[in-house]
Length: 357
Ligand SMILES: *Cc1c(COP(=O)(O)O)cnc(C)c1O
Image 1 (cartoon, protein in one colour):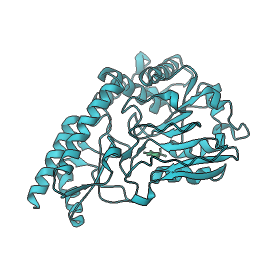
Image 2: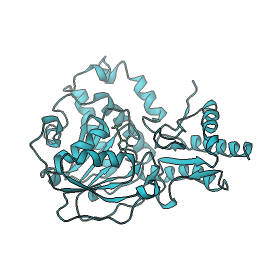
Image 3: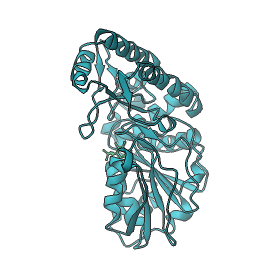
Image 4: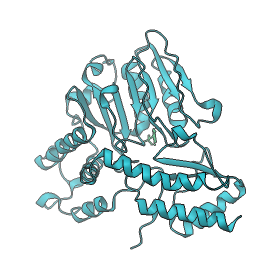
């Protein structure tokens, strides 16, 4: 078996150990003679897994007791509307526009509140994170996107804005330590850093949850999930199972701090090639806002980009083409992408440059 150097943006690389473990117990989970996907979500085996997954998240993210941890389906995109439907309540709601995903969240919020842009990086094609925010009085919350998967920017520090902050952490959750207590609500689709598509992690402060609009369809209310331990209906069992395995893996690696250090080293291997290429490679993000999860760049000679991606593919590098909306190149270096894979890509980039001087 030859595993690819997988730089996919999402769904993306999973730790090999996690995949192997899942493979091993796929036909017989915990001596039940059944696969985890063949048993009741009310069984004691599943319940133990469900509870442990929440506990591991609490432990690895240092989640305070006054926060709920929820598992919801519908992807990050459903969170765009759920956050607004529950918390906008017709009031002003602030959105920080740092790219495609935040724009989509903003668009959904217009149905539920008096939504406005508190800041935007659109003037420079989303190559930075704004540092000035215009928050109007009576604003219910501000929505930010921690890591901009498509443009390759990331908040180096989170702003203190004095109102509840809702944060989309879909593409950098558990890639670095985060002070959860700074946020009213955090959401993250699993398929970038935690598992397969199909489950979203939501971490919400209990007193913020108290303020939510209750006049909503059952499945759109966070309170339905909080009051029923995310078991009101069938949860995405397989997704939660894989997240559980990934969380164990993260714990075994030493947790978010160790991963943050490694992610920095990994990204540096590639950013250094860009910075030392005398302009052959052009990084998209301004340096202070460079993402450690998604490294976006162009080739000075745009015509070479196709060849760069195609030749790379033949060498086993998968997913290094840019997003279909922005073009260029992108290497996603999530937790599960090894340092060895990043070193190999860095080497390929140098070789490619030498050939095309
Ligand atoms: C991938 C992504 C999303 C969308 O997630 P879906 O699960 O496909 O709806 C939202 N926000 C960010 C930051 C993402 O990277």
